[in-house]
Amino acid sequence: MRVRQRFYLVDVLAGLALTARHFFGNMGRHLARALGRDVKGAITYQYPEERRPYAIRLRSLHRLVRREDGSPRCVACMMCETVCPAHCIYIVATEHPNPEIEKVPARFDIDLGKCVFCGYCVEACPEDAIRMDTGILEFSAYSRAAMIYTKDMLLALEAAGPDGRPTSPVPMPAGPRP
Amino acid sequence: VSTVADLGIAFGRVAFVMLFVLNVGGLLTWVERKQSAIMQDRIGANRAAIFGIRLMGLFHPLADALKMLAKEDFRPARADRFLFGLAPFVSVFFALVAFASIPFGDVLRLGGREIPLQAVTLNVGVLYVFAMLSLGVYGVMMAGWSSANNFALLGGQRAAALMISAEIAIGASIMGVIMVYGSLSLQDIVRAQGQLLAGWIPMWGIVTQPLAFVLFLTAGMAATKRIPFDTPEGESEIIGYFVEYSGMKFGMFAMADFLETVVIAGMTTALFLGGWQVPYLVADGFRLPGGWHLALPHLLVVLLQVGAFVVKVSAMIFLLMLIRWTLPRFRYDQAMRLGWLGLFPLSILNVVVTGLLLLAWRSS
Image (cartoon, rainbow over all chains, first blue to last red; front, side, top):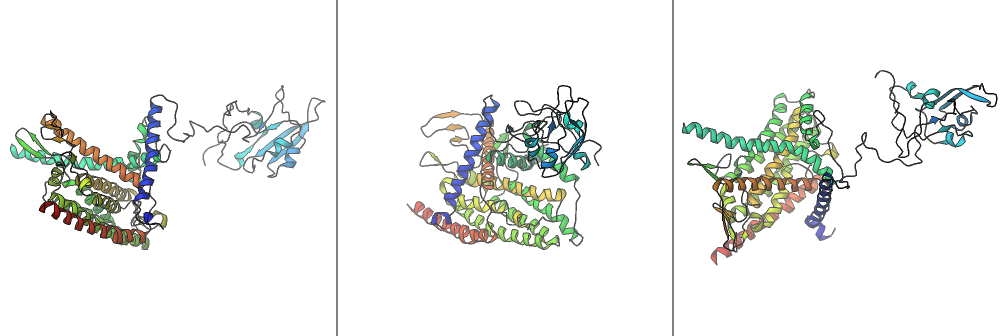
């Protein structure tokens, strides 16, 4: 320990100068912002109202892509269910009315309580029928059962806008608070 | 009629100091949150709102008080009922009354009366503040003892040890100031700081007693029991004299720390920063060393002086907060070593050097 450090004072003053510089610098920026300048006095994002920008490749809540007639593009090939490391996808296949399309899912459930958001289902899909581009991160539920999203729920979701913000409403917890 | 007026004036003086200290102490919870946030590039608590009006988080102290009043007032089964309830009141009371003898202005002449701007005019004001600060530790010790909790007892014992080591340094560092200005009355000390050194330097305590200023500030911070001297609370060790307290009683201990911060800031202002003195402002207006003179009415002079006192106290509080949010905490043994082997010998040295210098100066 050097002599200078034993007396604390010099190092204390250096530390105070550092924090005071932050204080007055930020105060100046807050003031400039109040006067209309485009500077930020804090790195805080005021979350619900203000969101940090998401990366383009962010994997958010899944959605099922629709054909032009509104039916799922999915052909129930079971690729995603097979590749899923968390075993959170459950598909029941049925016949499609159009003979040119082999199958269609009667059920397509994703248990988001189990999903690990690895994105393997998106990569495995040969039909580009499942995507993780909704920009929705804040889905929640009061029970494990309510975390299972069904085919209709997933079909209703839209891709996020160009700014990364969700365009479809964030699914809110269904049912009464326990 | 005159006795009624006198009573009213006395009441007004006490009420001014009381409300000043209480309000500033309450506001300090907001200052603490906001100042620390801005120092750390954050925004700080701003969500408490009344009808959507947030006022930069100014409602948070109010929300805190409401929360603490609504919380359960828990008392451990084996705690000493009487002392457990009394302890927070003792803590807050002595922190609150300590400010009484700190002058916030010179004499106000109004309608043929001379009103000293000070809650209580005491000719031993320094000792009074010092004594009240010392008595405050009894609340802390009582809390630690009566909680029937080993950790609380350890916290109370630490508070007592810290208080004693800090207060010896406070007393010894004040001694130099008393020697220079030759009085124990805070008002006289502040008046004496209005003189000019070498014709142009205001003779503030920080100029004549720079070492005592540093020592007093350090020991004063220790007396407030806040970081870097938070060993009685010891948040990271979960030792603390108030571990068993909840609700408003806990809030009172927190409040006492803030009030002590205000008292230390007021004491530092009165002893070292010239109290209510504005440089070159005398009773009849500004008088610069070059002979330039600007006459001001009496009321304006008094107003300027009270304003200067408030500004100086605020600046000191800012500095104390800056220190609290910059430095890491001392370990218990480090705090003790700093008090007994650092502050105490240095303040004795300060007294000796001041005495020698005064002797040389007066005999020349």
